[in-house]
Length: 349
Image (tube, rainbow, N blue to C red; front, side):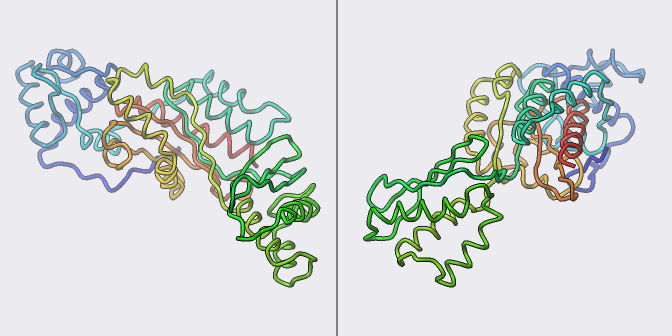
């Protein structure tokens, strides 16, 4: 398994063996319970023989390093985002998936005859269920063979392009139409593109159609040719598909409802979420994004664990991951995400 730290590990001065052990056990206890951790709890967990008073002194030192803070006036402490980053990059012990979890992931995705879109959706749903968080998938839009294309006027200067694929999917796109375009041009454009795209994908037919347009080799007037070019550009434009499954699990994550509302708003801003997931495409391993390190989650206090997956040619074509509170069980979720990404890669190959 490849896990990519965000940056070279920076260890605060004074972070020696004893503070490291106290800090590690405190963070592990916090990630397991979601509650502030006190000196008495740590004294029961630590392999070191330390009194609660000594532990409190170490916790105070860790707080001065910016690694811990007290959310209220109790004696308990929780890690700051800086502390979580230090833990994730330097102290996290990544476990192995249980055999039944591996089988659950592979069985959910390996149904014969499934379209790739269905496989990816099942992978996202499976990851959401196993992690009890929201599952995320960023992938390129699948280019299916087309059955029909039609242009329909919907308003002055606007037309709807209706695209029907051979597998029954229907997509609608709104485009601008040239001023003065006659109604008959919509039918001409529909017939022209329909004849050339039927039974083919946009990618395979696009170069041929553009060559015809550039060489004036078709019997279309100037305005209809512009309409065809606009429609083709809209249909063939690069597009990323964001799949989100299991967002309702976030309601069970013991994060206050105000933050959950903000998080749901973050998810709705899909363009920002896509840009964040794109960062995970830059490496080969699992990436972890924590809280306000990213502007998108500066208010909701959330984390993403994500990994890229490749196609049969070894090219990175998408990202799968988990979105949840910063107190994720990283040691379990990192291998979940990693294994799911590898299964997808095997299926695509």
